[in-house]
Length: 342
Image 1: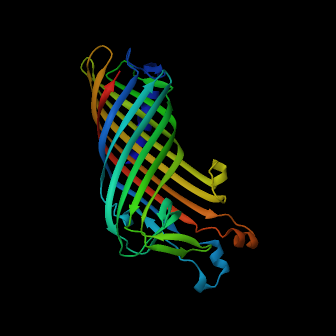
Image 2: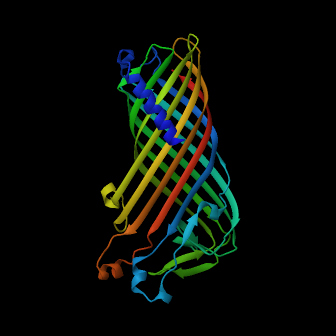
Image 3: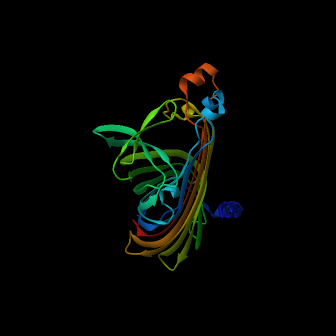
């Protein structure tokens, strides 16, 4: 679907370039109408995220029976295995050559489950015997409640050199864009009363057994892409608008190259791709406003590999870095949307 959307946009651009007389500079807009604001309501299905540990440098220097075991975590492990409702806002403001797009949405999810195995997690805060700790352990079979609040934010700045057939029944507006995709989540895991402390890992860390742990996680990344819209006149003022974007970003280097803060600098391979498509029916409400109703479909896929940098043996022993990790995330969202152009 992504390739089809990109190919269709490219074909339309080539066909339009064949008739340069039908092109106008920048983005064509109706007098007095420069912005769009929509409320979106929909569902995320699936929202998949996993972290899989692979190997740990210090393990290679230990006898086999003394090596730490790799862990893996997925949202499904905590019972988040069904679709979840979302609500959000979508905003667009255009100038002659540039357009700003902002899409924000929030998803609240709750789950009740039993730990499929012993789970060891890093949290921001958990209390036991009046003291605060940073790690929580949930024993296999323990029943827990989990809550997850997630905010998705996508901001783009698009450049439109030409509008093709600006005064025709069908209008084509291509653009290239630079953007940032971000996700921020807060979680709470209630595994009953805290019953004690378990020492785990090397170097040893204190894990609270059970209890109520909470924390947050955030990730942001850039994107580059192509997009555009087709507008069809339906009578004097009504319009059908189809929009689509395809975005990618690939990176191979070190976390410090991106300005990321980490206890130890890591090697990072990062691969991001996203596709979104939307359709609006626009109905006039006056000289300078329109009512919009429509639907949209979004897909985001992220994969990343973080690994310890090759270091001398004495540094490997001194740092005792944690496991290398494979991180994967897939988000598919379907929304209905309503709002205004003004």
